[in-house]
Length: 127
Image 1 (tube, helix red, strand yellow):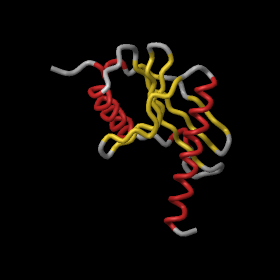
Image 2 (cartoon, one colour):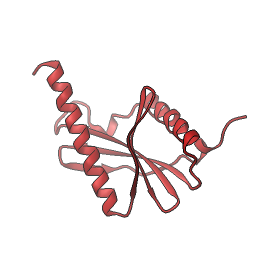
Image 3 (cartoon, one colour):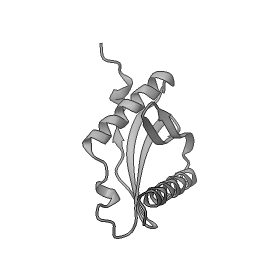
Image 4 (cartoon, one colour):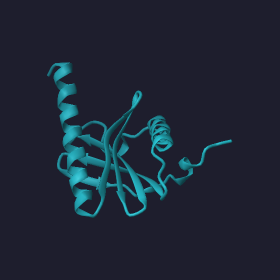
């Protein structure tokens, strides 16, 4: 398969995983705040809210049997970029409630929601 076709297939797989994640969480009472929010070079996959909580979801999708699974696809550098991007978003759109982060990994049609993490500290601007 040509490199560009593999890239396009990966983008389609990621988009499908984001849509399915959004649907699953909507069915659990979450409301969409932003989807594929671009902040400079960074992108926030899904921002959802339920009551006072804002949750950033990073969705990772891989084909079944892929060499690197979606469960391990988030590097520490990527986590820092996500925190910076969310901080930029919170500077523009202040959120009065709590802020959390959750990874969602897909392998084919199998989905895993990792435990959410509290990211409330991102709302505090350093002096």
